View 1 (tube, helix red, strand yellow):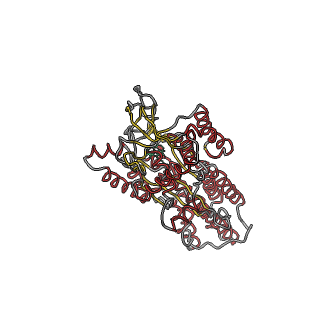
View 2 (tube, protein in one colour):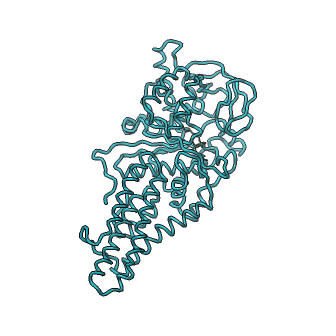
View 3 (cartoon, protein in one colour):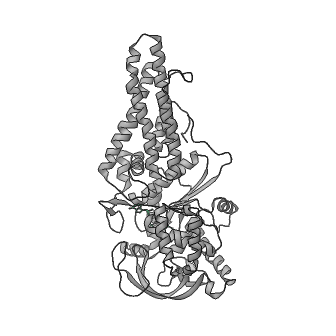
Length: 500
Ligand code: ME8
C-alpha cells in the first residue's frame, strides 16, 4: 500500500475559485466552491504538484455602491469589512489557498490597465472592423443584482435569474467585439473538449455561441466605483473585464517585482477555473475572447458545478434563503461540512442542502463509521499490545481481501479525482472502511485475545496490524476531504509529522 505516486520534477497546477462579491458575507454556497477547490489543491499537492490556489473578492460595481449606501458607509469601508469576513471564514475552514486577490488593490488595477493597453496596442495593427475594442452608445436592460445584461433593447424586462425588474441603461461605452470571436471560440471547444466541463455544459455553451454573439460593453460612465479607463477616466471598467482579470493579477500579472513576474510565468495559464453554472458564459465565452484579443494563453479548463439548493431554490444572498458555515462548523467541525458537501452532492449537478442530512451523514460515516472503527482498533492495539503491535511478515495471516479493497480504493480515488467525481472517490474510501469493519467483526480479535494458543496470539497481531495499516491508508486517501480528523488519526496511529 503506497500513496498516490509523485511525479519526479514537480509539475505546476493553478486553480481558482470565482472572486466573490464583497457586498455581503459568505454563505454555504460560496464556501462550497472554496471547499471543493481546497480538496483539489490538497489532493494535487499530495500527488506532487506545485499548487497555486487563488481566491479573492470582487469589490467593484453598482451592487457594492448600493449596499454601502444602504448602510451609510463608503464602498471602501464596506468592502474592507466584508473582505475581512471572507478571509476569516477561509481561515476558520482551514482553506489552503496560496493567494488572495482584491479587485480594489493597486496590483489588480495595474493588471486590468495592462491587459486593455496590450489589446489596444494589438488593435492598432488591425483593420477597423476587426479592432477588439471600440466606443459606441449602449442602451439596454441590466440586472444590478446578478450583474447581467438582461436585454440589449430599452424595453422593460425581468432578470432571468432573480426575476426582478431590470434597470434601463443608456450611455456611451467601450465595447468588446465579441461577435468577431464566434469562429475561434467554436474551434476552441471543438479542439479542446476538456475546456468546458462537464460535457453537457459545453453543449449548452456551444449552442449559445452558434446562435450568434453580440458585442459586449466593457466600461461604464454612470458608475464611479471602479477602475478608471487608462487615458479616459470618465469611464470605469465594467465588472466582467475587471473581475476576470483577477485570475491573472492574483498570481503576479503586471507586477513590477521579479518574483511575481516569475510566478506569473510559471503558473499562467490556469489549469482550472472552478465556478458555479450561472457564470459559465462569462468564463467560457468572454474570458477566452478577451485573452485571444490580447494574444495571451487561455486557461485549460472551466468547470461549472451545480447549485446548492435550499428547499429546491438556489441558495443566494439576493433571495435571502441562505445557510452560513460558521454555526455548522462550530457544532460539528470542518470535516463534517466538507464531507457532507462532497459526499452528498453529485458534483456538477444541483444538490439539496439540508441540516438534517448533514447530521445524518456525520453520524453514519464520520462518528459511527470511521470514528468508531478507529477508536475500537486503537483501543485493542493499546489493550493487547501496549500500543505497539508488531509488524507481521508479508503474507502471513494477512487478510488479502482488505489489501485488495485498499488497492482498489487507491485506483478508484485516482480515477474519480481525474474527473472531479468527489462523491465517487469518497465512496471508494468508505468501502475500505466498511471492509476493515467487517474483517474485525469476522476475525473477533477479542476472542483471539482470550486464547492461550501462541498461534492465536500471532493471528491477533496480524488482525490488528492489518487494521492499523488499513487505517493509516484511509487517513492518507481521505486527507484532502477530511484533513483534521485524518491528521488526528495519523497521530494516534503513532505516525510522525503531517499526513501531507
Ligand atoms: O458571481 N450553490 O460572485 P458571487 C453553489 N463576483 N455555489 C454557489 C452558490 C450556491 N447556491 N451560491 C454561490 C460572482 N455559489 C462574481 C464572480 S469571477 C471572475 C466573478 C458560488 O459572490 C459559485 O461558485 O455571486 C458561484 O459561481 C459563486 O459562488 C458566485 O459568487
